[in-house]
Length: 333
Image 1 (tube, helix red, strand yellow):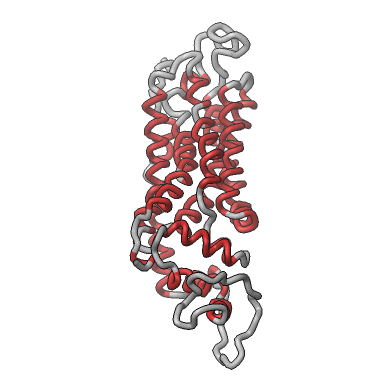
Image 2 (cartoon, rainbow, N blue to C red):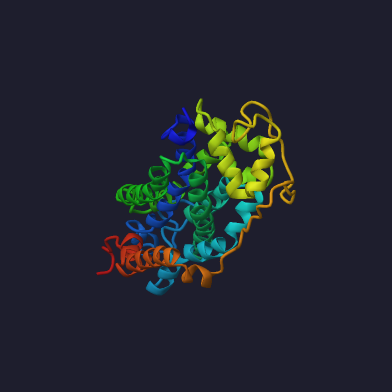
């Protein structure tokens, strides 16, 4: 069977699920301040060490400071989103996902053992860094390892795990919304993050990224592993063609069977991006479109407008405020 006809090979699904652990952590960070939020910053004993030795019962904050503390993870997300693209392009998708868990682990532990408001805020910012970077690299990884026919379904797994994380954070937060159990609620993020650190190395690197850095042998081996026993010749050729161009893709044909788009058993090796194919007058043009060019293109403009409107509607619906600070505030009276 050709790999373009495969839908859900087992190993590919496994890689997607392992990558989506980050999405679960992301959702937990978003929802963890909801139900236990009140007892985190308002309690009877305040900074006194009554319920837990060495730790204050809560971290007293006024409404403005608590609002900043909760939303401070967005600061980390903004910073990470600015540099995330370059990081994943330089170090690869899989390695970036693994290292990204450092923010979840350190940040959640800081929040759980915080003895001062600043310590809690720093923990939230660190978690936000991982949320921002993960929101970039995980969907990219999923899209690049998924089969053509299964890409849409696999792509939805990221947001599905985010929502599951938010839901479980709210449900588990109900029994933990008391002194000193609220600290456990913030610490839980570290456990799936540690799990992903150990499990993600068992997943394949993105073959498309490997092609982009000219590691062709590894890219072919990675794609074959992701597609099981399926024939990957056509898909791999189109992948190289899309990333490095037709000239580079056709260069592989000279190293193997001309009847195949890509060599079947022989190593295709690596090649120079700038080499010219003799006798071929076809010249490729890989123009980078500016934002203005994108908006001038009728197809891209329609797609961009649709996505933009969806994002605006999502924000104006108030769903983020409900998710983050909709917990019952029994102490306000």
